[in-house]
Amino acid sequence: MDKFHAFKSLMKEYDDLLEELIELEEDKIDAVSEDDLEFLQDCLRAEEAGMMRMRGLDVRREKLMKEMNFAGMTFRDILNEMAAVQRKELQPLFNSIVRSTDIFRKLTASIQTMLESKTLANERKLAFMQGHGDGVNTSEPARLYDKNGETVEDRSFTRSKTV
Image (cartoon, rainbow, N blue to C red; front, top):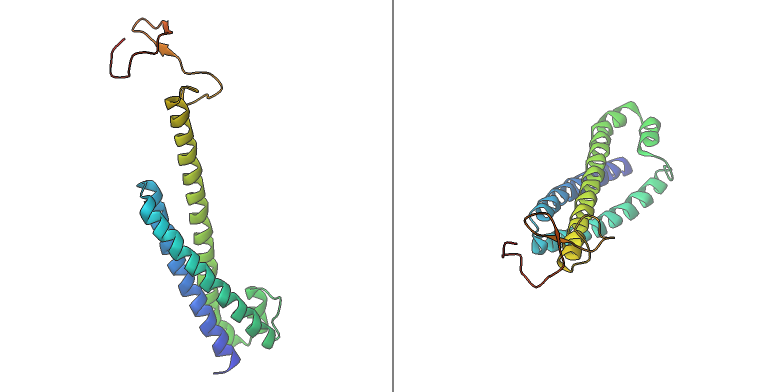
């Protein structure tokens, strides 16, 4: 196989792996939304394996780009250096890689935001349960009120009792 076709094949592998990683990110969003920690752990393990495969593809890509005198070039630069026929073959693949990379980054950012929100909500719940705050402003101790809206100092009752 000549270097062009080896490069094209490698970029196809890269694109396919990005699609797999996108599916994993979507699964992670579902797992976080449903508080399914076991499924999330499975997704994280699969993602780690996928990222290791990605590193392997990167090493092969860099080696092949060096052999083709494309070392340090962007995909757009590579397209500009290729003959029109080759460019026509690679353009859709490169477009797909750019699109997939953008989707992957956006999904990753969404998951990060979801996790941060859930962590903050859990910290607030814990602070409230421990009596260290109202669950919103943890700098103040939790307050209890009777049915008239007066502060209650006696904390001997449980939540299930009416005051």
